[in-house]
Length: 336
Image 1 (tube, rainbow, N blue to C red):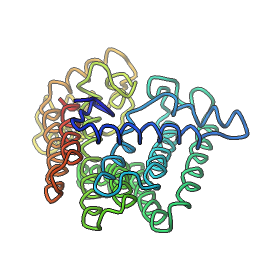
Image 2 (image 1 turned 180 degrees about the horizontal axis):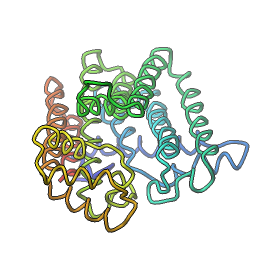
Image 3 (image 1 turned 120 degrees about the vertical axis):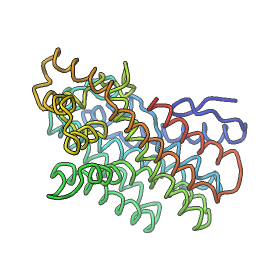
Image 4 (image 1 turned 120 degrees about the horizontal axis):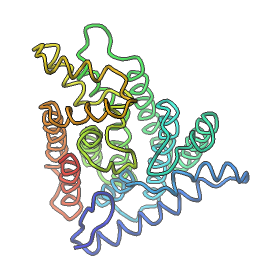
């Protein structure tokens, strides 16, 4: 048994291990190549987050999905580079919107340089991803364009908030389906599609990626409150401090609206106060850790991970399928 990829995914098949490791190494080299520019400043900015590391969750899913066709097909590694470049580009833009100071344990691009540099670097990465896509054919371009539209729509929906009468939790799940689920779905789709797997398998792995992506984000929501050391490099309660709505907070607010318990209303009032004050932030974080909304959010994470696992049922039994199932378990494990 060898441990590879994010979350310590264990691979028990030597041939699969070799394919995945070779693919991930090639993607890493491809990322460095794709972020080079004749302008050294652009190279420094574009490689800032590449060199900071990361889970490389999306390229890993590309490599595993490719096992259901020809894992050595020429489009697999480039498509892994495309999905990771796209993800990295969104991080540059997200950090500007969130005024984040830290990403992956290093200063964010906007903190190291400024917002303009961060936005333009994100645009540069999108351009490089599009350049690679052009060589993968019109179908790949269409798939990526549709996912990118969903991603941006999700971001706009998050910024605008739920419309009058819309349940905030349902709205939030739609937001993360677009912002996170769409690109992870593309990772599964590209891996299967580029490997020449049949259309039924491509659809299965797309559905799997969508559900796993939502579970992945919900696990992050839980970790922001429950963890002692956040694996993204952020300190615990960062989203809480910045007033970013996450599932545990939305579930608390929903319960407070429906049941109007004094302790819930008091906690909502605390969350609505100035949490840049360290003592108040610590009080809010401790209260959220003890609140049933956190456990309810964990259950939602498990539900989406189980839906991802169930989507795999029609696939033939093989080491790659076992690894995809283990990814579901790993996402749930992150949420405790």
